[in-house]
Amino acid sequence: MRKDSTLGLSPGKLARLLGITLDSESGDERKDVVRGTSDLIQAHLAGTLPFETAVTDELPAIIGRLRDDLIAHGGKTLGDVLTDPKSDLDTIRSIRRYAKRMASRKSSKARHAVAIAIYFAAIANALTFHDVKITTHSYGSLRASFGNLAKKPWMPAELVRLFTKACKLCRKSKP
Image (tube, rainbow, N blue to C red):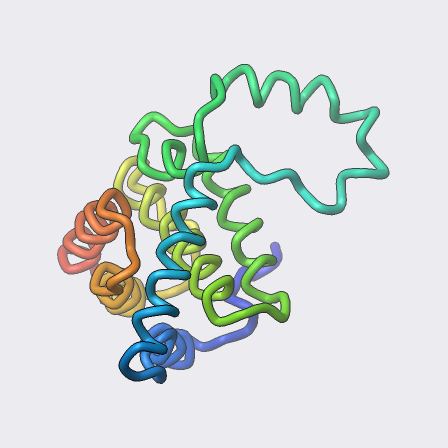
């Protein structure tokens, strides 16, 4: 069984990364970055579920399954799926993998921050609504990450609520 991680980053490095994401700017530059990141995460959350990038070769074989997936989600946005207690756990795992790949690509700070937020939102959904931990990170590391993300000025309210719930659950779990 393959051990899943966050791009090979240790929990401590990931926490530091979350801590510095978008915090190094100052004044008007920081306001512009926060506004841009806020717009970007809203755009991602309002979009439909992401397609797997490696599926183009297998497209004929998966059209039936994709059709079933789209019907099952009834046109829900990514934000709806991430915050819905009834979202399918396999879908949540797929979103986590998608966000992990998105975070590993060279991109702007804003895109990277959005990918990290989506990654942890998927983990928070699984933990909060399915009572399943879909990561190897410790509860202490998750608690710190959820807490840091909930404090970001660009974080949408629905994700702040999800991160807050997940953070409380991590406090009750073993470290």
